[in-house]
Image 1 (cartoon, rainbow, N blue to C red):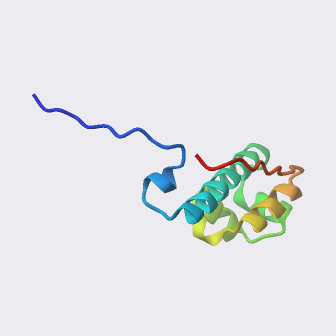
Image 2: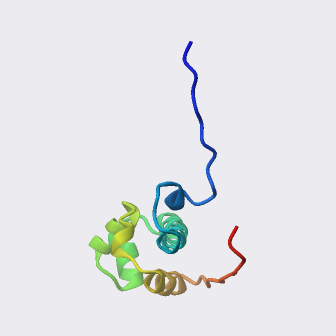
Length: 97
């Protein structure tokens, strides 16, 4: 009989993967913004080209978004893109755990 060891997640997968705290926080915010933007675009547009035209970006940029290429996006770029689809972003700051 094998014994399995499970380590509980800490709420930020990037921190759990060993990224420095500040980088993990930035990656988590970008991932959340990307997930929301991607969801909106997939609901509103049939093709990547339609989404790209609506956001005034290239189709390749939309492909990067859909494929989760997090390194190709900054927080400010994602906030700007979300604004173009009628979303606003709020920031909540809390003490670190």
